[in-house]
Image 1 (tube, each protein chain N blue to C red):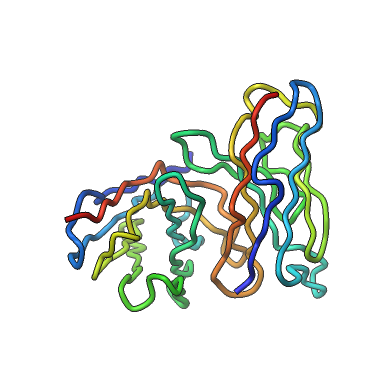
Image 2: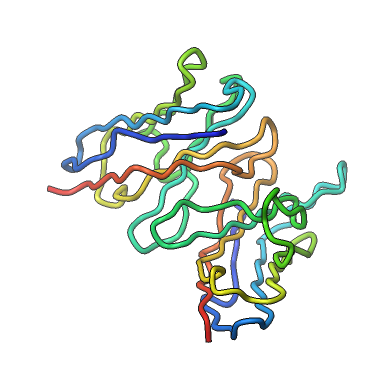
Length: 114
Length: 119
C-alpha cells in the first residue's frame, strides 16, 4: 500500500500570510502514460465532511478560491494557501488515487491562526 | 444538485451486524463509483471500500476485508455497506463519497452516519 505522510502535523499562520502543507508518498503517484499525478487535497472543518480542493495535484475544484494551489510531482506535493483567511482554519488531507485501491490519505495537518 | 445521504448508523454490540445505506441524487448514478470512507473520533480519514460505477470491481481495505460487503442498486441510486463482526475499532463516522468513473478522487461527500460499537 502507498503510505502518505504529511508535514507538519499542525501549523499556525498569521492572517494574510502564506501557509504551506507538504505531502509525501511512499511511491510515485505519477502516471507517465497520461502525465498526471494521482493526488488530491481536501479541507475538513469541524463537524463537516471533507471538501475537495485540488485534484490531479494542481487542478483546483470548481468554486475553490484561487488562494489555494497545489504543486509537486512524483512523490512530493505541496498545498499552498497564499493569503490565509479566517475561514481557512481546518484540517487538510492529501489522498492518493493511483492505480487500484486502497486509496490512502495522509494523517492530516491542522491549520490554525497565529 | 448532487446529494449523498447516509443512514443506518447507531450503537451496536461487538460481533453484531449493521447495514449502512447511501442514497444518491442529482447525477447519473450509474456513471460514478461510490466509496465508503470512515473517520474514527478525533482521527483521520480511512478509505474503506468501493463499488465500481458498473459494479464490475469491488475493493476493500484490509481492515474490513472478509467482514464488510459493499453493494449497489443502480435502480434505486443507492449503495449499501453490510458490516458484520463489528469491532470496537470500527467505531467511526462513515461517509459515502462520489468518485469518478476511473479516477478516484472524491468530489461529493455525504454528511456521514455514526457507528458506535460498544457493549
